[in-house]
Amino acid sequence: MSNSNTLKDILEKIRNTSDVVSNKAGEIKKTGNFVKEFAEVSIRNFDQSPMKDYPNVYIDDLQSVLDNLMKVESILDPTNHLASGITYGTASAMASISGILTSNNYRSYPTYAPFYVQFDQVVDRGQTKDQVISAIRKLQLDTITEGKAAINLLNAAWEVHILGAGISTSKLLPLREAIEKTLQAINKKALPQSKLINWIIDLGSKVSFSTITQTDLQKLQIEHNVLRDKLSGSKSGNYTKDEERTLIMEGTLHLLQILNFVDSSKLK
Image 1 (cartoon, rainbow, N blue to C red):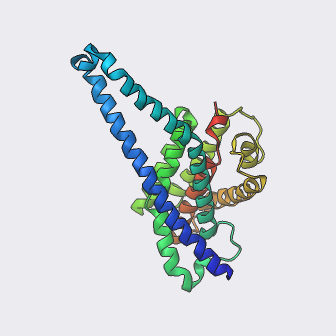
Image 2: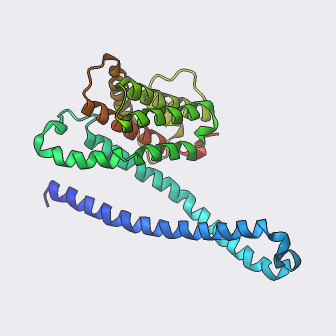
Image 3: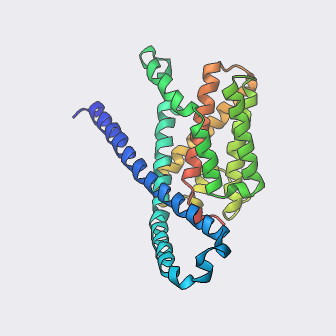
């Protein structure tokens, strides 16, 4: 089988497996919401219910519900780590395809134009930005000043981007600052280091999942350096609208990678 066919086969399996995972996860979510709604109603009206007057009738059934929920939670905890790995890998693959570190500018090839139009729409719907904000909150970085600032800066950058208004500095510089504030927040929630030369590598060595290799961190550090310079380059005002659009998407994917290599158990 040629490498091209191998890659197509991998993509086909990713599509099919991700659909199965989404359906199974959706069933768990629906079950969780159903149980939560029942519990909230019961708590609100507990004093006017038979549960208050005859607790022994219901306690075994409800203890069983709680026991099973705890079992699901214990299973999902490591599963969440796996989900972070999937998100990290997907963002990395998309960043590579987008062209952050690609020596050849495949985006300039006319034959690839239809693909990149569709590819960019996947990133540009705002869902990638929302995933970043969700990851910031999952790591509880939004409980400190730097994390809150990162969310505000990211939202500000994307608001200008989606509206198609403003100059490049009004979206690319806030995005650069959002990445910087996120790294500062991670450092602050870990065991803070005062002098970080290579932020990705230095932080990653302390807080990344065991599945993240030194090679992964080195590649991400190079990507970080390239992106930081490109985002700072918006000050020159020489970027085209297409280049600005690509940079804000690549910067957001890069930020998603950073957040998803962090093991929350290694933060305070």
